[in-house]
Image 1: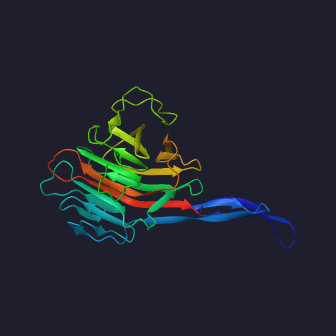
Image 2: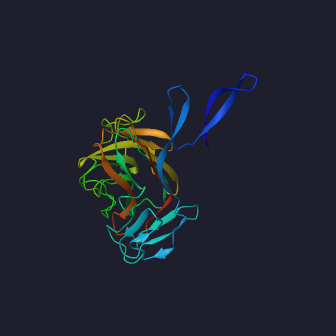
Image 3: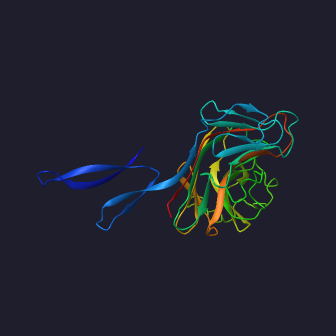
Length: 290
C-alpha cells in the first residue's frame, strides 16, 4: 500500500486545502530548498519468477533475466503452487551435500548492489521451507554469490543472510557456536540471550572481510510456513535483520563499496530418503541513488 504524505496547497480562492501525495513504498522522501517534498526513486530489482520454465535437471537454467538456478544432479525448479518458484534437490540417490541455489546471472544485473553509506540497500524475500529435517538453507546477499555454495560462511568478502540449519551447527564451514543462555551478540531487545535449542530457530549471519559472526533469533522455523525476510543497511553500513516485520538483530559495519549479490538456496545435511524443497515467492533488491 502506498504511503501518504500530508500537506497543504493554495486553491483559486487562496484558501488552504489539504492534499495527499502518494509515495511509492520503494521511494525515499527528500525536500528541496523551499521545504517542499521530493520523491527520490530507488534502483530496484524484482522478480516473482514469472518467466520461469518448468525444468527437470536444470543445471544453469536462467529463471528470468536476473537470476540463475544451479544445483547438484537432477534437481527440479517449478512454479510453486502458492506463487513464486519451488526449488527441489535431486531425487535420484540423494546425498549429503546436494544443493540447489539461486544467484545473479551476472554481477551487472539488479540482483547485485554495492554497500555504501549513500545507497542504503534493502534485500527482501518471502520463502517457505516445506521440510526442515536434514537440510540447511540460506537467504541473503553474498560477495561470493556465484560460488555454487549455499553456505555463505568461510569465504572471503562481505555479506549478510538468514540461515537455518536443521537443529545442528556442524554443516556450516564456520561454527556459529551458539550456546543456550549465553549473551546474544547484537540480538534484538527481546532476544538478549541465546534461546534453548538455538538451531531450531532462524539465525542471522554476517561476513565482513571474510570474518563470520552469527546472531540467534527467537523466530522458530516451522515447516510449511511463509516467512518475510528483510535486511536493510543504514548510512552506517550496518545490516538490520527483520523477520515478519520484527527486528531480530543488528550487525556491524560492512566494508565500504563491497559488491554483494542475491544468494538463496538449500543443501542436504545428511542422506535422507527423498527430496528437500523450498518455495521462494519473490526476491527484491533495492537501493537509493547514491
